[in-house]
Image 1 (cartoon, rainbow, N blue to C red):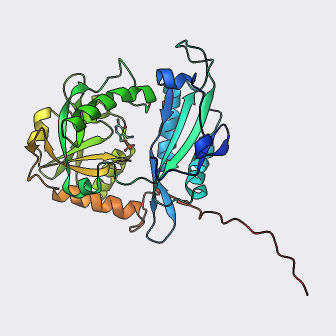
Image 2 (spheres, rainbow, N blue to C red; image 1 turned 180 degrees about the vertical axis):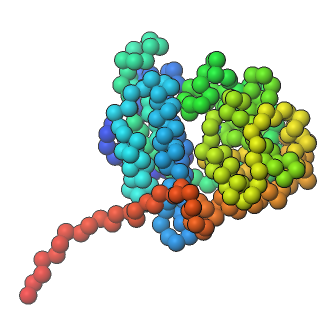
Image 3 (cartoon, rainbow, N blue to C red; image 1 turned 135 degrees about the vertical axis):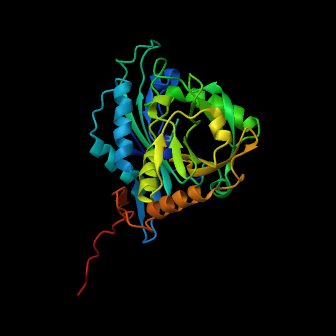
Amino acid sequence: MSDNRAKWVYIDGRWTPWADATVHVSTHALHYGSSAFEGIRSYEQASGGAAIFRLEAHIRRLFDTCKLLRMPMTWTPVEVEQLCVEAVSRNGFLSCYIRPLVLRGPGGFGLYPMSCPVELVIMAAEWGRYLGAEGIENGVDAMISSWRRFNASTAMPLGKIGGQYVTSQFASIEARDGGFGEAILLDSVGNVSEGAGENLFAVKDRELITPPLAASILGGITRDSVIRLARDLGVPVTFQPVSRDMLYVADELFMTGTAAEITPVRSVDRIAVGTGRRGPITERVQRAFFALVEGRSQDVHGWLRAVPAAQEAVAPPQETTA
Ligand code: PMP
């Protein structure tokens, strides 16, 4: 995020220059992962200006994650939404990534978090294609990770909890260091769960198949959007356990996520998926998705939140001389 980062970060209840937006080393979240976060995208619109995609759904999930962490929020969802809008406009961004973060602040060394203050941070940065611009068109090579997605008896898969992302990091390192574009994790019983930071869809006989929430996935907002867009396009969607070998014989495979958007998977464990290229249904869903988020099609679901244009510095009124 270093080059295209925002000038202003919201922290400690105010907009602060990037370099000054720091936390103390005793921050509980740094030691124990006690943070809730979101990743949200704003898109430059075909008609000009910017719009944030599914802001309300992201903030609802942020509040759900805070609930799982027992972190009391003193901000309302509407206030957090407004701060996200401001993070885009105040920094003069159009297409960017917004990162709200709620964390447990300074405290002692104890695990028990309840006495640590809860802090809200909003960051933003211009950010391109997470899995590469080329990946969106040609697809990425994925591997089945040796790491399993944790289940609801050891952690909270439905929450976007900072500490839980160590598993995704292990999987990501294993995949990238092994020459793959992304990792796919199985759940604790051996069914397919999701990517390190994405949900997964298979296409078989012109139907979309995706693992259910019970497969320890994060309930992705892009996943939900794709399900609805597919239905709009007349493509059936089923939720069912997906076995590892189903991936190898799928006609098409793609990943969804705010960062990854819709990225085709062209191989799994070096086995080509279908023709080894982006498939026709993936392409149709991608087209519908990008047309919607960029404001080139009608926003029938009401998913876009317009961002007011960056405020120009208002010059003091000039004294007129007669
Ligand atoms: N799974 C995991 C583990 C993720 O981190 C993400 C990214 N938030 C997703 C799935 C996709 O979720 P979304 O579409 O809401 O970004």
